[in-house]
Length: 500
Image 1: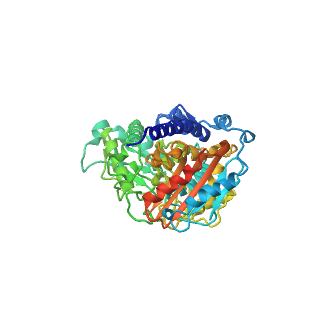
Image 2: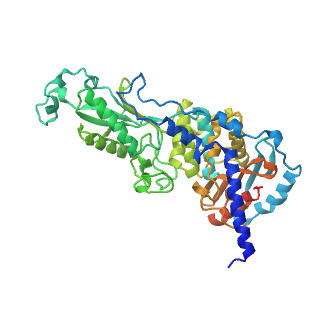
Image 3: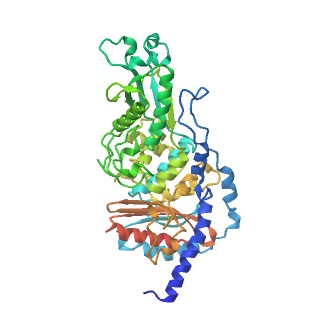
């Protein structure tokens, strides 16, 4: 049983952590009434999926999400108001040096701590050594996607047709009205099913709810054209190269395709927010097309046979479209939940924007080129995927802190979701159950960081308000760690020492 003073100290630390958490979260902003800014903006801009009944030349295209630049200006304290102790670098070396030598972090861990306001590296140990980053690579994925695409970009999933009957030119449709749905071998050419194609745009967050709305708009558009029977096709040609991640079939990621429903999850985790391992379908695109066809039938349309894969004709007319949340919200969700499917989607969107193939190889080239164009220290980096599941990925702790510092730059507000998406120590996402040990409790609520875990690989990269009120960016990478639990506790302890 704990002594009274220990209880008081523990309770006091928890209260202090909660109070300081509010300040740290506000500094990392933008938040509004407990809701991330990107999520709030999305809710305000949310509308129907779009279809033939929407006016204008681009049916259903959502308005851009409002910018958060004004909020950021109010939140950012002037650099001159902050005063870090002159001996801070020496103090950090004295504090962090011995902790970094812990055998729980393997033989040669890497570390970098940077003053975000000035870009000065306050502590570094093998900071330029490329190492396996695991999921901390998602910070690079996020910066590249936001920089290339912009925070307001949304990913569309469309339904198209090139069939003349769907344009209302088929006079044969007038003959028989609704009775034309009856089956028979003597049907005329005008009674052949209209071919429609569900075109995947690479939205890894497409779910049954949005497919239902898409089916509703599609059915309405077809009925307006006198069409009552369709042949459903689906197009996944936007992506190229291997579908399977190099790790092979795995509960942590679905086959990477341009069309999927609920990330191909075969359990109930697709009903709510995605995240975490789950059994996955071997054919997410085909399954999504099956769901879409079922939803069309629920709305009174007949379908001719099961959906088949096919490339949409170039001259096809769009019947309906549904859009993802803006990239800003996708980045936040990817980082908070360490969502591998969203990560692979975002790097392929970055490749498409750059005119490169939407494949593992094309995405690697596009992301590295985007970061290099931003004059970030990419030397030695190998970004073989967007998720960090590839054990051949390489990144430096110095690059990770440079990415975080860039995301905090007041002149780059479009990158701010990189900071707002980081989990809060002890409270959210992949850090919810961490920072509970006595030597790390001071970091609870104070630290926001992206985790990374593979067998023998553990990493942590994020931000914390340090001595003098300075916002610090840190990154710790460990390989050949003897065990994940002890390595995580050692990383928590390291980062907690940075908290003021």
